Image (cartoon, rainbow, N blue to C red):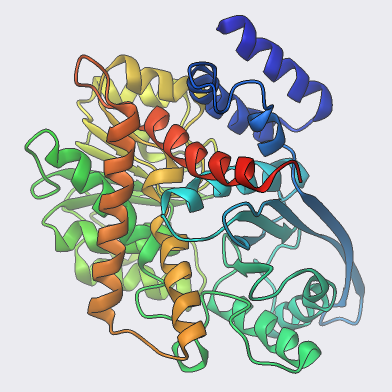
Length: 447
């Protein structure tokens, strides 16, 4: 089996040189899915995983825009349309200077499995640009978004490809993107999700990824007769996902100790309560400040510059910042400090070596494709509401979100529970996501 996996990965590396993030994502899936394929004749010999790792379409384009000083700026835009076997492409747009084809292919590949796990009819895609929104005026961001959509609009649509937000793309950016799409197409359709409530958005959508991650962690803890209540929780990030993960932890009776951004992390031994979290939301969403300012507002807290929070003793860790933020040494520290549960809020925040540490220690670990699927699940619910020209209540959407996260958890247990009772959520999520997409691909023939 090892030889089969090595040969497959060698072939993928040759076809995708200099794409480390994408290769990392493929390796994690191949190690669990290929053994399953070999044992099931329906998939064996069909090169089904090789077809999955090859995007159906890779779109790259130039984005020219004018900054506030009148200078012409040039960025690069992308859309990776990975797999449409079970529905139109669905996945976010990321605006960040680190964006490149490797990162977007990894995100699109993960999105295929994540969307499959939601049980909703959505294929996988991802896109974005190396544009950096930090420090830009609203006018500059509007001009960039309009320029970006003036090309992207040719490749998307409510039955073709429905982008959403991601890092660097929040409600403001979605508004500018949607406005240009509407003007160019002369139609009002649900082509983007994460829209404002007054123009086609869904209640709970901003909260969904963070809430869903905590709901998933709660389900994992329940398998051990435990709960979030009373737990010390370390969270990385301070954007949308981290904010609402913290909010849900507080609602369930947990204590949030940390938040972070690219400048470092804050540690509040007394806990980041609802009032303090409200300040963080204003700081990050309105003032667009840095997390270190929290320590100025609350002097009892510490700001540790340039570090991640994984050295803080905790019961539960929720990595909600970005890919590969939690390495092997961080994982060992968490385990040594008594952490019993890690649930990923970001996409692939734990390296493969870190995941091995968690599995070896037999602690609860949920990969992002399962635990952070709440965001895209609620995007799917937004698409349904757009199609119906109707809005569900906050309670109805939250109930559906909880049901979806519970269903994903059940699927992970179905395929990931070992003879010793330990649940390998990575294996469970990969196989459950694979089966639905593979069955659809086989039914549709070689296309």
